[in-house]
Image (cartoon, rainbow, N blue to C red):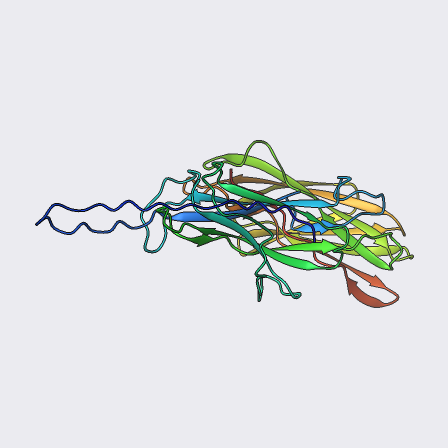
Length: 311
């Protein structure tokens, strides 16, 4: 597993303040609240290590760039309110990864950091980045999280949610299955705090079974914080339903062997003013494709969840 590691030398200085004789003791101030975040580029948590045409999600690289960042937060337990979105350039920042085949569902984090910076103040930064070469990781799922440690800098420790990176093996479209892939999200602007934007993503289905298929049912949901705003398909029929404030899309399409079809999902979403910078917002749930082959009901692997990160 390839990575870039950034390690600095942390130096902590302590200033001793002596109160005047007879003065009341000074109350110790709480640390300022912090929020650790994690982001991926390409911004998918399902990553294909080489498609049949030699590309990876439309890119010729097999690398996934993972960035951890630290910001002040407006809320937390046992800490003082910070200024939302203000970069923290002090303390330590680590990107941690799971090991031994564990995922975020039951993580066992490695003692070796995927990427780290022991002193964010030298040079001043609030982030650390690592690059994962996925070329030999097909079929693996690895969980990542960012861990911020304030130490004596005046900022409280925090950890981002753990996010699984699913690395799919390259498909040559002769493995006898149906493949469903999710594109990265596109937006009408930058997803900042308080913004209202149009978003879209594409689900692409491909028949690699060796047989023609009828009635392939591609299905998945949107997200509760967005509003469904339509779809564009190149074939087939679409029906819509609502479940737990999300729109469930069911797209039924016929596929000849080796044939590829796609559907674009359009959404509109408003990011709340109190949303911390670095928050990952999902635009979809996992999608799958159900089909009948040789009289047997089968289903594709689930896609990852399409997301955007608040900037």
